[in-house]
Length: 404
Ligand code: TYM
Image (cartoon, rainbow, N blue to C red; front, side, top):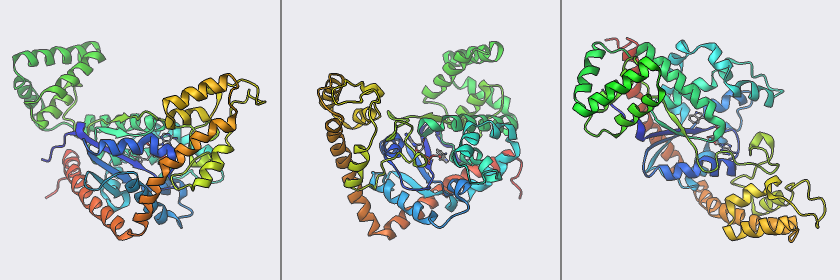
């Protein structure tokens, strides 16, 4: 049995459905770059997910996948610290998806908020497909296949991660019963030592008899802290807390960065489909033009009208890109009508341009070395497959499908 420390395991993914924008960068990618040094990280270009909405025109798919890999590398993801791979090159994602589809109630999929929202957003495309409905379940397979405990995403993904947790819980409830589970769990409790066994038992009892969810959290935290316990026993004791069986598929948690929902040029969430994005590959001129065209505080009609940064779509970008001194200058100048909107935007334009330049230079280097990029993705897929196969051994065993 191959055990995974899911609290140290990170998985996340992005859809290669067009150019990456600074919302992706500040919302998640920068966080991934940080996490790769201290966690066991898997980052996946989810090309099957891109197909769920763009299945009619696949002419640009492979270009988008390649561009995404280049941008990831240019932003600082490193193949020596993290595993970078393409979803469709690890067919185990499809196997787990099929198995999970057997136990996932249709109603769970229908009530995921993005199902109706995306259908409305992509009007003109037929999204009444099986693949589109199953989108969150494919995402569940992506995460659970690596038994990842941490999923760094933007806040728009929260409902998906909650859904993944429900699916994992249902799977564990149905199939987590190993032979002699209770005996093994009781033996594991005894191994905790007198004080901790007593504490574990009382917390478990408080949760199971009175539904005390704080007790459940405390017990989970206790298990997390304990060093002298095997991962197998930890999984058993986590499962035993809730009364079910062993945890085959751990429930993941979403992790947010400081900008979990970056707003775009119009003040709404930055997104390709809203046509309000600054892209990582925008030229200096494009950046300047886009920011210059940004609407500002609607109440500030004339240059002499004082404004209110909190009402202005430019302000969140200043808070992200500008120094404290510049932010103070904006706040002071805007509210007193001391500066005009054109003036206010200038330092922002320069900071965004400066931020993007090194990324674009590194991207150009990878563009000239596509074989390197392909090699990184190929070895990433190999590494990912090794992990994925291990999980599937456990999953098949739990389902009684380990035929000889
Ligand atoms: P996707 O491709 O739409 O977006 C990729 C990631 O970027 C984040 N993001 C943002 N964050 C902050 N501000 C913004 N304006 C902004 N726009 C996008 C998204 O929240 C996301 O984290 N369903 C996923 C892809 C996926 C996945 C997975 C994610 C498939 N399997 C497994 C995590 C784990 C999606 O559509 O993301």
